[in-house]
Length: 342
Image (cartoon, rainbow, N blue to C red; front, side, top):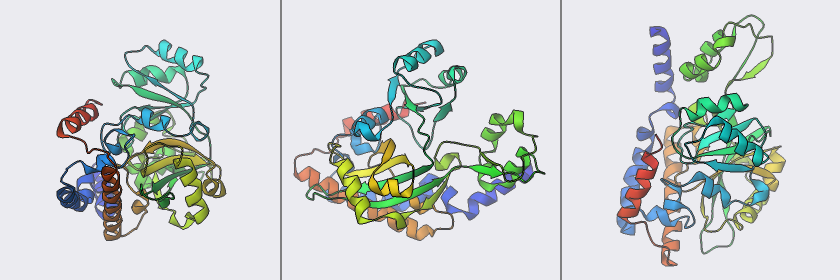
């Protein structure tokens, strides 16, 4: 027990990608204060994406944001508001033509909170016992590649740019024919950080010997907080990709700054814009490629600050066109909506 706790502490200390959110974002917070002074508003960012509450910084509906995305590039989904019984949820799923497995996730979420893969009706009751707010039921998109694509466009310009691409490698272990699943998990640093969740999920397989070369995907949700490795894939950015995502974004009203979390069949499909968008994240999203293992902390901070600078310019341009900044009252209401998620 003590040995495992020490290993977890040491892993977090030596890899800044696992540092507390507040430490990583402190420089951005100070820069936000300066930009707020220049804009004469603490909530200048709310003008970045006029069609999304707070621009996507706080309290926005993930369901409403995803509805802005063209239907051809988003999975089928529905919104369920508790209270609801497992049978009622299953009936709605059938009525909408959805098929298991599915993804359940809160309409307001943060960093992978309460995102679950639901394999059948028996999993619904457990999910309903934990959630009290509206949640999204979404098709599980069974495509092999998952990316986070950050897109920006200045309101005064017709074309935008892909400024960040994050590849995602799901948390997994590979057997050698000798070690048990539990041993493989304990030897994997990222899996070790998910110890409590994995011991509960795989209790019935914990002592099973895993065959040589067999890979087991431990978590199928592409979120850093759930053990996914984020990889810098900016080398994939091309002019064709910029055009492809500009074409998609032309059909998204009032969207200028944010990140698409998506799946696709291949890197070529990504370049062509042949994707399925799982989430549309507004101005609160990060250029997640900075969390590539071994990446420079200072380069990561520099990238975050550059994105805030772009966010400020986009918000200012929209404000000049008549988009109002969020008021304190509106911000308080958005925060209460966010805080109510638990």
